[in-house]
Image (cartoon, rainbow, N blue to C red; front, side):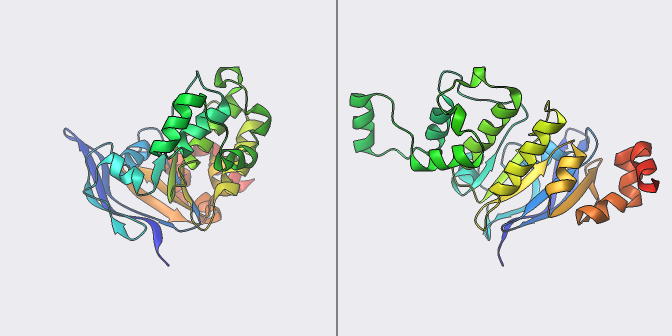
Length: 253
């Protein structure tokens, strides 16, 4: 089976600081893979590297195609999408229109129709994503009117609207309460299909370990553990280096 992502020996340096050191990470097709680690471990840098926003060494293969030399826009056009820690929505467009922008594939005729007819109506893809993300009731609302949890879902839905082969999610649960995080997790799990895989970076351990098929752990730019969520929970190196004493106590409870 072709992997959605194969990253081999990915290294990033900022001056004399080695942010990533020979990171190997695979995302199988149709899976949700988690990437965790303490602040400064290099998680966002890894997403930046594979999506083409920072220079890196190593090899990056997307769906069997080597994209190492491709720029960010070329990687995106080949099916690599990402979200950002800060939610960047089009605040002057409705929720539905935010998704329509992402699904829109203009033709000369469609451009003429939009010029003459004004705003375009919701596409079938946008409607389906609104339902999938539980946003149908908010379709005609402005993003600024939504609570944080729904705004996060709009950002995820917009990223999914391009039908990516791999979607990298950078801290999607940041700022959410436990109920919002749980709801987000259910939506993310449902977004995984045979054609769309997810790479999830988040500090919410319950979220990542609860919905991921496989988990990698970064510390100081290096992978220190990998495995199924239950194995990662019990890994002494993870408990010591990342989860800390509170988690170690929970292990013995």
